[in-house]
Length: 194
Length: 313
Image 1 (tube, rainbow over the protein chains, first blue to last red):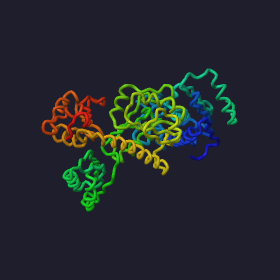
Image 2: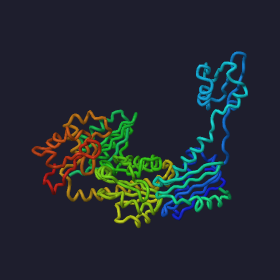
Image 3: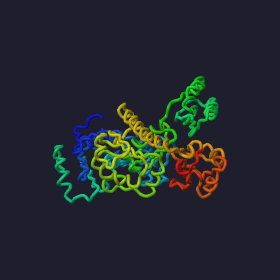
């Protein structure tokens, strides 16, 4: 695993600590999140029992607009969208259908979408947000942490906002002040204030 | 009396029927036959003195005969749950490795086996595990958790148990009380396929631990032998109940060390099985108990020892 800028696993059980280091490396690699996570600190104590993961993401990908993957060619009668990359074609069609109606959106072949002229301005189309990868990235990060945490730790609290995230889980009820007592100090170790 | 030893024959499909006939003629038994594309794997029992003969005959067919200590055993690999945390790695890798040594393995994914305080074993899981020759428990990373949950997971289990976990063997020995039959340390919750040499060495260690445990059981059985050798009863059943040949299971009759699992519905076939004559005047009902299995609607046959029946077929 290429090193994160900061990666620490803490646990009173040394063998468990080593095992968790390997689990984190495997999971982040499997889910392709190594490039996304910048700093990660995990604390796991089976005696309490508690599992805490806190970290910082590298950067959140920005929203994808039509101009990022298609050329817009306005003609006299119709506007032709020339698709360069199919990745976001499905959400694009969904968006166009919702906005202009299915009868106005024609797709003669895989890489071409045609709209009648006049229903939309070129500017509008260029800036139309088609997908927001950060939405699924949030879910991926939380899923990874759920996957890393011991399975029995079903009571959990999770947070992800502005590139900072934490995930606390336990078998028992979590104390109300868990964020102040456990997570803030862990963020402080990474040099970040929550 | 000739001693039958468990071996695996690996070779091509071409003329493998000759090997099957040979094993049959020598008085051996084939307990499982796998055909995978061009390859055939036969799990069988053959007379010790005749292994060289089989090797010689198999040579032109590029077949090889290797000793497989676990042939004729059915082993349960118990995983704390069927979630992605515990599967597919560890549990499946263990099961696959045991299968290579000849065992028939079944995965038992517990419904609530995870966690430290909340781990549980229900009656169905307990009964299913007890229908095997041995159970391998694939446990996790923390000493504390294994110590607390294992007594719950073994409650009511009377088959031998081999435990795997991340703590080393000595720690496992210390925290598990009363002791179980085998321990393999250094195998915890692993999220990748076992491929590094040290991981494969652990699997070898597990196979050794399992075969040591089963050998001890075999020694006990030698002192008070079963009324009939399970693979022999298996051959009789396959010959006499023609419905077995129509089952699509990979092992329509599964051989165990002290019995058989017949994958026919109990309600329809149990009486027929019980009254089936294995030798003149001796029926299966005389030498074995025929009971419903907790696994689907199968039939479980447990062969009684000689000391109980005074019959040796």
